[in-house]
Length: 154
Image (cartoon, rainbow, N blue to C red; front, side, top):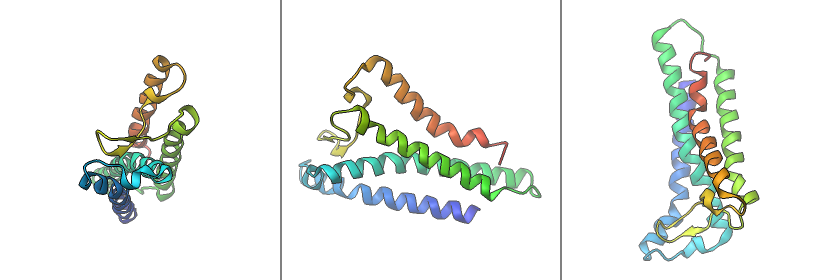
């Protein structure tokens, strides 16, 4: 299972690099939007960058849990199905959370010139901001901590 997780981590890192390519072009042109002026490219890079950062951390956490179990209990079987299930559930939750801006915001993943990135803040929401910002960040914290919940189960 470790080889599969390493492959997934490398694939996610490559996807992160490709998602940053339009940003690099923008930075080389004095933060002019360039490719990111296209709404589809901006949203796509925003969603990919949003997901790959979290997914990379989560995959490393799952790999660390699997390695720890293998070192502490060398004869204990690590369920491949459970590990793949944890990663699949995490990916699905992460994608749903990154698609929330399309439902609750007028402008999902707008171009931010100060960072030369397309990303979304909870403050961009069109309804009550005071209640949704803690909820949004709470979901983000849950997503990052989700794989660690299964540390003793794997």
